[in-house]
Length: 373
Image 1 (cartoon, helix red, strand yellow):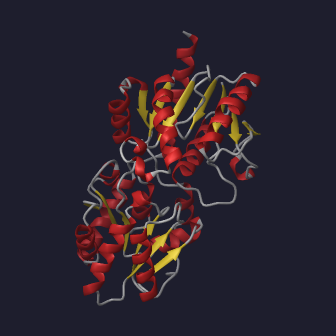
Image 2 (cartoon, rainbow, N blue to C red):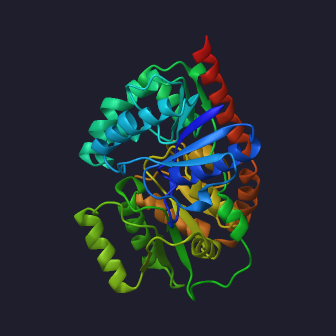
Image 3 (cartoon, rainbow, N blue to C red):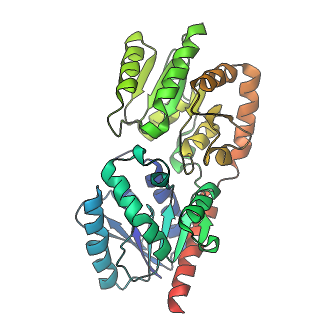
């Protein structure tokens, strides 16, 4: 097969986030498992050579850089569609759930979540307008769909009346970077701390986490700090900004902006707990990262997060800052920590990139087979 791939989330010289990590890991496995096929990687900007995994990868840069809905449309409908035809490619694989509405080729769309259908306020108005207009039509048109959790599969099928037989689940797993970097390393700090990983946006529940930690500090005798490790994607609300500034001035909050993988592992590894109390997730890779580093995890009891965490994490109501505070109090108890770490290592074994890549590959085969009927 000749497989065209949307690789615009494989950004050069950066710490990959959610979709980028998934794209990297699945493609690395696919290219290694199937040298008999040719993969055409469609980038929207100059690419980093680390993403050209093997001889069966052909990089193609297509303009313009697709970073907002108007440019999405031009990139998919004009650049990608023309190149698919020019190269006579058999099937298109898109890791962000987007494609060309006018495309007539078989395609497999990977869906990480459909938060726009539930909480549109979490997205800029143009993005949510575009997704609500286009995504349902793309999913109905797609030859096959892959989701990153059972939660997302059920959500997609229920929201858009998609036949469940058309949708497969290919889980995330522990990023290879974490596997390679985890070694005994000195603590990056001389104080105890909780770490909150990932981009800082409204749906990551920054406000309630701040409130929960502020309440925890009222009885803290050990000098705990709260470490946020990620970038601000959008301007925070006034309430978040005020509390953030107050806690920073008191020395209770530390911000690591865009930490690389090695630094991230070091900070996670020495945390007293990893907090991932998001308001909506399609999966939640940081949950696995915490488990792999031997760190207790506090996460939410909604959407996909209980599916990922199993019985290895403290699952709380993310809308309650009081529950977040209580989880912080429980997770520093030595006996609780030991049991959670033990269960975390066991839960981690359920997620495997090679197995997920096989699911994606089978979806590509099915999509091609449908086109030939």
